[in-house]
Image (cartoon, rainbow, N blue to C red):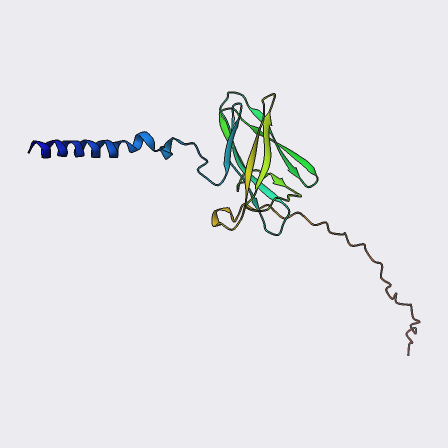
Length: 187
């Protein structure tokens, strides 16, 4: 009988240690940092770059940068956003007021459209964020299409196509020629 009791105790202890030991060996997913949306995050000094992504039309060579810039300082900052494109590099500037956030690219907010954009949907496009004398951060920003309903209104506006102003053309008009009208007669 003592053997059974001892075996039961050993089995119970092994079972408790076996199930409790999983937390000692297996990594916990909740302790890992990750981007919880389709965009990517980064930091430049006191400016947080949050949920940065590009939305493109399949048939256009332009991309709309969607990003939220968060300023945690008591001073406003002018952030430079630099992106390479077919013709070199594009730099845009966004001012973020003190203790506030600034959305870019969403409805009701200023847009930042990169023209001559050659990165295909599904790929990553490098974007450099920097302000003042702070060391900037380069992020690999995902390029998405407007296929998802949430992104359907975020595509860049089409590039305006130049239209020629029509030149007025002079047309010959027939000018009526005076005719002799007989004078009225009395009588």
